[in-house]
Image 1 (spheres, rainbow, N blue to C red):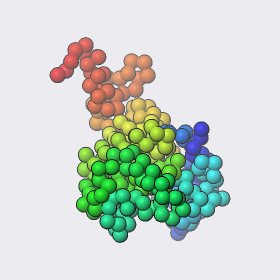
Image 2: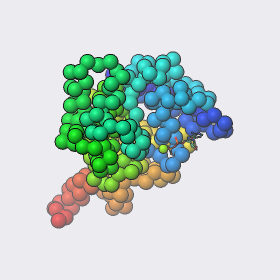
Image 3: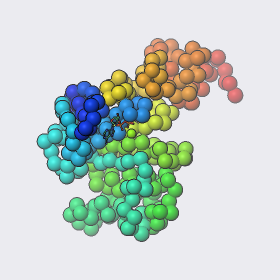
Image 4: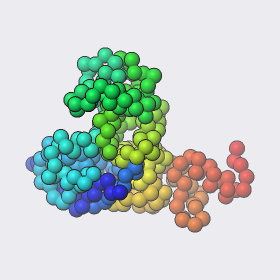
Length: 285
Ligand SMILES: Nc1ncnc2c1ncn2[C@@H]1O[C@H](COP(=O)(O)OP(=O)(O)O)[C@@H](O)[C@H]1O
Ligand SMILES: [Mg+2]
């Protein structure tokens, strides 16, 4: 089922002369985990905003083409209605914490309180969100005593407790250490497995290579390619769009170690290791 349909989307911020999104067309299926990559200023954040309806309902400007989320055309829908279908998590978990709640549990409950749910439904949703993000053991903790990775997972839990079918994350791990980043990626992978459609704009190429089903490359607001991590990171012109391939891919490219049939290169450490072992017929360790 097509969860997101983008057709000839164009967008320019008010008082600017340049398109931030330039004629984008693509579709996303339910349960896919999509990575958005591109240099600074490529349009990643703007695309995230357009997929949630904040562009053009909050950020005005010139808008053309069409975005359809869960069957709702963004431009014809209220932001309050769209919010039931798509949730967004930003870079810095601190900005998304209410600051007024004493525990992680209350923080997650906060977003649900205005939804008119009965008590048992609320409790069930909070427990499920805690479980999916693997933070049940933290439910009585003070949100401000958490690590960055834990706090970001709490922010994601607060959004998914509202049960949007689509979750958009704009560089959610940029403030996090490697362990925190891993926690977040593992959590969103789990959510996608449960059927949630996940869109994640991210600088950490190695993480996108390891976790995304497909990768969308933006350059100057234009869609350069949208394909599997193997296809995307095997492109030899990727760097000209300001995006390096994962280091493992670069090493295999330099050594000429590629998949015999598809011609693509390994994108993770494990794949690179296996490819080298196979090529040399014995273990490298
Ligand atoms: N609030 C804004 N007002 C005007 N221009 C903006 C605004 N936010 C981003 N832009 C411009 O839109 C383009 C895309 O930016 P952005 O979506 O933030 O890229 P990325 O997230 O890939 O770094 C850039 O040229 C940037 O300068
Ligand atoms: Mg950005």
